[in-house]
Length: 231
Image 1 (cartoon, rainbow, N blue to C red):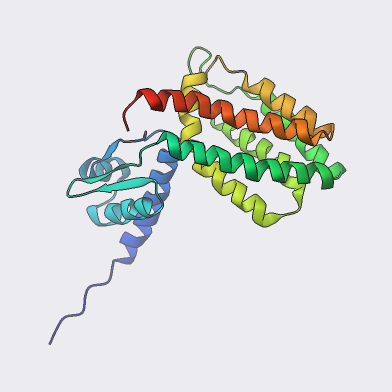
Image 2 (cartoon, rainbow, N blue to C red):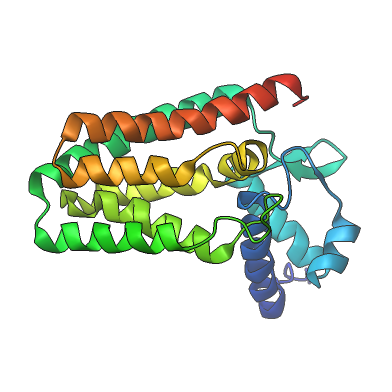
C-alpha cells in the first residue's frame, strides 16, 4: 500500500507567509539590496524560520520577480537592471500622468482638501532620521505614499489607481537606491510642493510634466549608479 505524499504542515504555511511578507518588505525597502545572495541558513537564523517555510517564501518571491533562483546555488535578490528601471518609470509616467490629468478634470473640493492636507503633512516631517546622512524615516515614507495617492485620488477610476499602486510598489526598491544617492542634494520637498501647486491651480499639463520629471530624476540618479556597478 503506497503512502500518500505528506501535506505541508499548517504552521509551516503560516510561517512561510509571514517570512515572505518580511522578506518582500526588506527587498522593496532596499534593506536587502539587488544581487545580494539569499543564503538559506543565514535567512533561517535571521527570520526565525525553518528550511521548509523559508524555501516556500523564496520560491514565491522568485515567482514575483523579486528574487532569482540560481541553478544549484540557491537564491539572490533580483538584479536592478537599468532596462527594467527605464520601463518601470515610463509605465509610471504614462499611468500616473493620465490619472493626474483626470483628477484635475474631475476632482472636487474634498479632493483638493485631501491633497492640501497630504502635502502639508509631508512637508512637516523630516525625510531622514539623521541630518548628516540618509536614514529612512518611516513616518515620512507613510506621508509620501499618502501624498502621491492623494494626487490621483480624484480620477474616479479604481482599476487605474490599483495599477498605479502596483507600479509604485515595484519602484520602491529603486527609490530606496535613489534616496542614498541623492540625499541631501535633491530638494524633493520643493518638487512635491511644485506638483501640488500646479495640480491645485488645475494646470494639468504643468502638473503632469512636473510629475514626470519627478520620476525621471529618480531614474537618472539610480540609472547612473547601475551603469557603473555590476548586475
